[in-house]
Amino acid sequence: MDRPCRALLLLAACAAPRLAGAGVMGVRFSLHPTVASAASLQQAVKQSTRDLRSLGLAVSADSVSSCLLGPEPALFEAMRVVLGRASRLDGSPRVSLVCQFSAGDPMAGSSFEPPPRTAGATLDADADGELPRGSRAQAPPSKRTLMRGVASALRRLPLQAAGALEQASGGARAKRIADGLAQASSPESIAARIGKALEAGPPVAAGEAAEDDWVAEAYALPTRVACQFAVYPVDGDHAAARTAVAERVAASPAARGGDVLFCETLEGDGAEVMEVLRDALAVARESSSHAVLHATLTTNLQKRRR
Image (cartoon, rainbow, N blue to C red; front, top):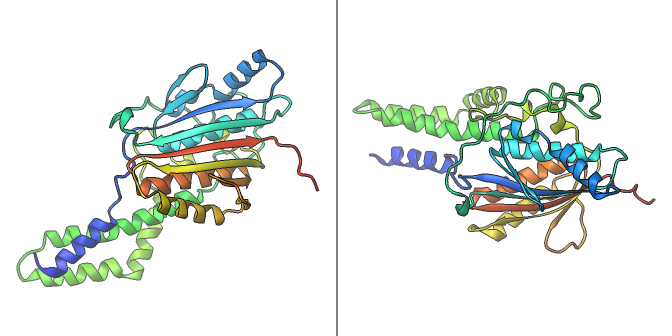
């Protein structure tokens, strides 16, 4: 193989999607609404967590917490549903949600077949007209959806060019190399492919739901959520991941400064807070086969003092 072709194939390999963080992914969480009695607490938790299995998740619970296993989009969809439901309980109690996401834990095995997704547009039969925020039909594609679409399109360009060059032979090889490089670097080609990718959205495995297909309750989040979280790439570059997460937090309107040890702090719209958490875990997964995110979210806080 000649040098230009090797260079292009190396570029393709570097641009290929990483497999870091592959394997079983799950979240273990506990919900703490400030209700009047133990019976009220049990009912509040039950009401806030019902029907999560229909999102295509394996669900188990004990006296301390609940555990969900399944695709990454569905796990964050479920946490949004739980937080939103709890915030709308009778009396609007102060609610804390403690959750720990884990991706690629070797103790959990290397593969997992989630149950089929059966949820429709909404989980709650009486939700029509009662949800305070946007519904699935009204929700625009998230920033994360757009970013993933762009990244996916850019990754495929050199791979497609390399595939064409691998099939070339003889005297046509040099011309194929030149044409492939020109096509991969053409601004018009890049723009066209990115446009198509954004229209199609990122690839979604069978049985999963992309953000635009989440149930309506996943968008019915409180307008004010406080959060403290930390991300741990268990076998990766912890310092680099923390720097990348800090940069993502700093770019968010929900960022809150101050000297808070051992965690990042957010306070703002619930959708923005959840999006930052999701991005932070994705950052850690880029450099680690096993990454963990621990977060505490609180809503229905008292009004800020002026």
